[in-house]
Image (cartoon, rainbow, N blue to C red; front, side, top):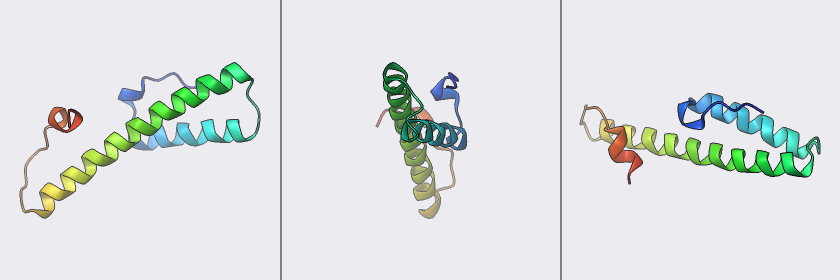
Length: 79
């Protein structure tokens, strides 16, 4: 299992790792402890992807409202 810090991952990379985790778990290829660790990492990947999607949605809302400006990522992360 990849141990790249999740916070450093791009959306597509996180989704690809999540798909690999799900595939491994569905295939019954993991022992219990590895399965628990995979589940925990998968949940963290899901939260990371949801956060990135929320940020993208906020950027789209800003663009659609005619406001062309950078979105403060820190502000979005603290919402």
